[in-house]
Amino acid sequence: MTDLTRESTARRRLPPGCRLRLVQHIPFLTGLDVIPARAESAEPGLDLQMYTPVLEGELRRYLPHRVATIDVEAEGEEPRFRLRSAKCRLWDSGAGVLEIGYEVDVTGMTCQELRHAIDRLHELAPGRWNETAARCADRFVANLGGGKTAFFRGFRVAEPPARGEAPDVTETGTVWVHDTLIFSGLAAGLAEEIADYYTDGGARHELTMERRRWPLRLGLTACLVTDDVDCRKAAVRVIEAHQALWATAIEYDRQLFRVLAKEAAGKGIRRLEDELDELLRVQRKISDLASKVSATPVHLSRLDQQLWVAVHESWRLQDQIDGLTGRLGALRSSYSELANRIGTQRSRRLSYFLVMFTLLSAVSTAASLRVFVQQDLQPANADSVRWLLIFIGIAAVLAVVLVVFVARGYGRRR
Image (cartoon, rainbow, N blue to C red; front, side, top):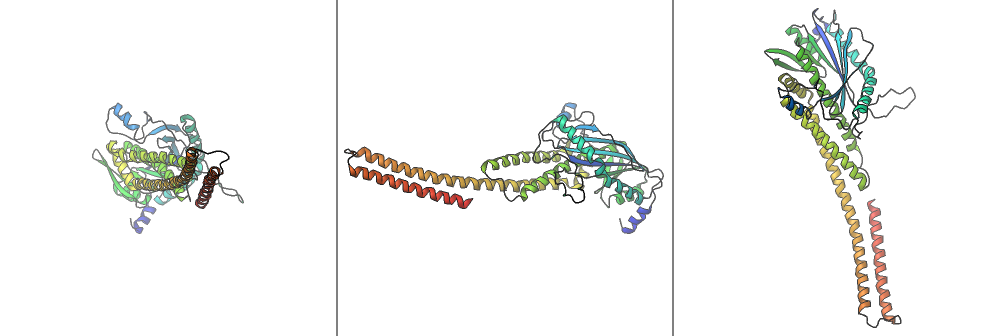
């Protein structure tokens, strides 16, 4: 879209028969570490192919799925935005997603006026829904249990500091707001211009089903033009699934960056072992996330599959997961090298003590043999006593030398 066309579209008034539904997705982290591997039967997260109920139920456990849903009560509506639905859903990856749906009154509005109104609602969304997300996170934790983990911090609302006060550095969950605009009642040519305008030239995808076609534009904002109810529902649920996956991937990324930025791992072999165990646990979770993302599109119905591929390619989720695995490999290599170095140091120190004890054993054995073969060894025999004292003195000097040598080497390595 050229600048001239964009300005022309911005001044264009939306036609009288145009209808708009705005859906906002707000993902957040719940702090749950262990989540039951079950899916809601009444409202599945994704529409699978026509499998038998037994196979479908088994597959849903190993694909991204919703675990629980909470209906959210909300008050106060913005002008022209009528709140239609507000739900909070927990996904198996540990992320929660607030889904807020609005019916928008676009009567007499130009495209630019509508865009400014949506941008204003977008800016107000975090402050309006943060407290709701925090309550839902606490409710999920209370109802489902599961432990906390160092790689998943609980969601907390970060209040702005008062004047003169230091900022709050409490750990916060990953939060953003994503807008999905679903238009209906638009002519084909006008639909293309409007979708391109609201997504700032986002990638164009064409959805097909039963000889019908619907244009979909995906950028930082998603825009879909369709009169089909099933297509609208499919677009919302696929975008919601990607929001949950992206929130989980971003949280892992943030934590891996922090660990990589540390100057050194924990001191001591016991501390290092604990960190290696935590790293192995995170590696398994990231591998599980990557396998679910790669396996999902094969099992989806045709419409959900088209939407999944379009969103996956436009938002480059695979690049994010590849980056996760790369950083995890670098971290694992760093820890392995550190473990090998600590093991080498400990082996060297042990070898010093082994040499010392070996020398002491040799001297003790020689002294014992001397006593055993000396037939006329008596307390009054001065030569025998003198030789015995010489052996003992040599052993003591060697022991002192080895102890000093080991102590100096240990001090240098510290």
